Amino acid sequence: MLIDFFFSLRNARLPVSVQELLTLLQGLKSGVIEPSIDEFYHLARATLVKDEALYDRFDRAFEEYFRGAQQQIGQALNIPDDWLRQTLERELGGADASRLEKLGWDRLFEQFRERLAQQKGAHHGGSRWIGTGGTSPFGHGGRHPEGIRIGGESAGNRSAVKVWQSRAWRDYDDQVELGTRGIKVALRRLRRFAREGAELELDLPDTIGATARNAGHLELKLVPERRNAVKILMLLDIGGSMDDHVARVQELFSAARAEFKRLEFFYFHNCVYEHLWRANRRRHAERTETVDLLRRFSPDHRLVFVGDATMAPYEILRPGGSLEHHNPEAGATWVARLTEHFPRCAWINPEPEGLWNYRQSVAIIQQLMGGRMYPLTLDGLTRATRALSR
Image (cartoon, one colour):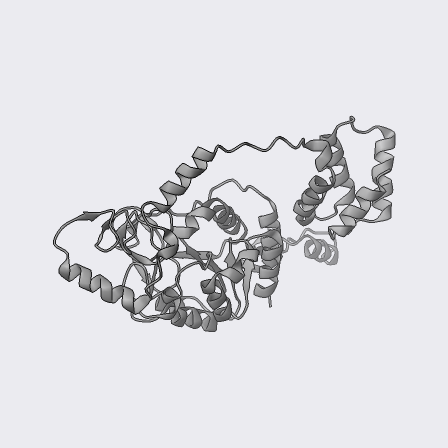
């Protein structure tokens, strides 16, 4: 009856056994559930899945097998031609974006200095001067594959290599309710318990033994409380392209705060430079020198970067490449210093792993991390915790 379903779970790399399948069939035969796909799902998961870390994989396999029973394929939407035409006109504006080209770092800044010296007034919608809209690489709200954004909001292209403005970001919320328990399950693999502190916890076996040796007179034996001895230093990318991943990173951050009492965290934007910060509202006023992390935290800390590693290569490789300030040393220099000081380190990337090969900056960060970059998935976190445990 359910042989095909059984083999589909096997094909999804779920360790289901014949005995578990027989248990499921016996439950169905005994009528423990109503004839409902939802109730069958819960019964099948309870009888076939032994590890809660595999729940997500089971859900995907179940949905794939029973898709026809749960969903009806609807009619495709008819998109009006005039709607498509208006969208293209709005996207391309007065100039075909395909004719625009990247200027390169040196030429871009050379032209920017020339425009600053020559420009006398405000310009809007043009292709040359500093202003708004249009296809000029200088200003904001326009369209160009590579430029310098000055004031105002991004048009959504995320193609600026330098940004002159004060931007405000919100801290990640460590009290958010977890959307998936799989994150906590994966992080628990990193826990290492040790007995520390005052002797406050009853050692029952030793108490029984000591009382027996003392002719039945009660002799209490206490031991220090067991605590998770793992120390985590987490550096979180914030703002820009990371806005797309806030919800998932908050889940990871909240789970980490719940699992690891010895967790320290700092924020950075795109790449790590000479300073970090703890509160985004005061990131310009209250900064922590990155070199202080090397002094304050011992090499037995596990270093975890969280970021999409999506940026211009300049931001990693060149002094002055930061979007928001002139950094005296390249971001790659600081990443190398941190990974050398903290040998047990990993980079968690919320972007889908299939997209990494199309991002030059991701390849650079992967090389700097010695290949220790993992996706923000259950399997990725499992691999990351395995690397951090070595």
